[in-house]
Amino acid sequence: MSSESTQPFSYDEFPYASYPYASSHPRNLAALAQLFALQPADVSRCRVLEIGCAAGGNLIPMAARFPDSEFLGLDASKRQIDEGKPFVDALSLTNITLRHQDILEFDSSEGKFDFIICHGVYSWVPPEVQEKILSVCRHHLTENGVAYVSYNTYPGWYLRRGVREMMSYHASGFDDTQTKINQSRALVDFLVSAVQRNQDAYEKLLHEELSIVRASEDSYIYHEHLEDYNEPLFFHQFVSRAEASGLRFMCEAQFASMIPNEYGDETRGTLSKIAPGLVQMEQYLDFLRNRKFRQSLLCHCDVQLNRAIGPERLKHLYVNSPLAEQEPEGENESPDTHVFEHASGRTLTVGNPIQVHAFRHLASIWPCDVSIDALADIAREAIPAERRPGVEECRHELYETFLELYSSSLVALYATPSGCTVEIGPTPGTTELIRHQAEQDSRVTNLRHESVQLDDFEREIIKRMDGVATIDQIAAALLDYGVAMQAESPDTESPDPKTELQSVTPTQEQLRAVVEQKLKRFAQTGLLAAPNV
Image (cartoon, rainbow, N blue to C red; front, side, top):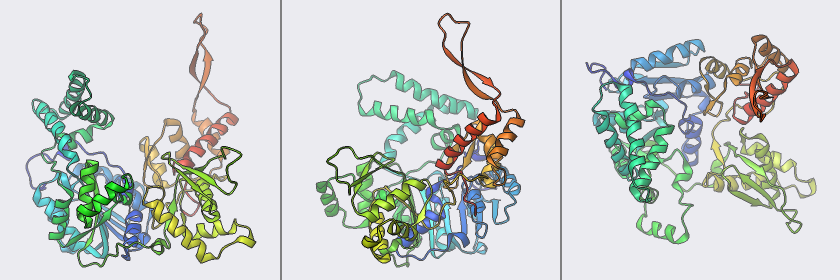
């Protein structure tokens, strides 16, 4: 890791793909901190450090979204930092610094940070660097600060480690990096095809890894399976290291993963007997789930956490959920009972009018979020005046409801809104960040801090969505640009006519209709910016 090393740094030779990670976003970290009775910093005015920021794919969108906050990204790869800096300059961001620096050289002059992010680094660096990461978290977190550290874990990585070592052994016979990657993919293909199809544990492992390898980018294959360092550890070992550094485990970045909802009463009863403490419970859940990866949040060891999370902790938080109300299935169904389907396929059957109207509103604004207090007011106003409950009653009802649903991954909670909208106005707009990303690549970061893949036509629309141009003007600009559309036409050369696609020049009316359809997709994928963003 040292910048003084004469050996070529692997991330300079083969950069890691730089993407956003929604679970590491301060609006998620601050919401979790609030649930555990911390008083986190205002996300719109905070300091954020990212250790191992690559080209800034995670940090730059945060800086663009919160201009009054300050962001510092460090990475030992000069090549990746050099790739990120032009992006910062193009957006004229003055609140972010991307710095080529070995974390071992980080010192006390950098001051304190409200949030420290270290994603995809800890398991892939030597012990002295792991120790430094935790030391930086200890000495550079503010009093109520939160650190996010992700790492590979056992027992899930025991099986995967075998595949990694097979790939590493095979790749060691080649010199060129790209050849190593190609040969690693080929080895897994060969193993899967050659192993007998009797569905034993080994074959299932190979098929699982093959699906991951086939879907992964080259940078993932190289740095996950072919790097010298990739040392998973058990959760309890990570917690022990954190505590030795003066840090405390607060929770996981994905809160619902801490709740054993998928197990029956007998299993949960046994867990409570053999795992009386939080660390033991989390470790035994890892055993049950064969967990491979964790995203743990840490705070100072002397911070007083309150793990008895009451409904009132949700006050001022924002909520969203991908819900859709279902039509009544039969005449015998109660008119006061309503069924909402979650995108996961699970259903919620409710009769309480506060919940019904709240869920309807969430369904209508997805993927946007709304403050729970505002949502309570919306639901309350939808109830006839003679049956309308009080303001505080409505709010408390939703606090209780969403705390339960949050524990089951049926709603998401955040400290601040994403800034996206589903309202397609006469002059639809997106952010300067998204427009610039569309100029450079087909992958953009939406306002929910997620990657969204665009086709070429969508990129051309996005580039023109400055919040000033009307839909007609966007369509006209695309027509002037010379965009073509795919249309069906019969294959007259074949005796058996079939449908094939050919490019045709559309009319402006046709183009406008297609643009309107694309705008609906942008609204559903968090790419439309609210007017004040």
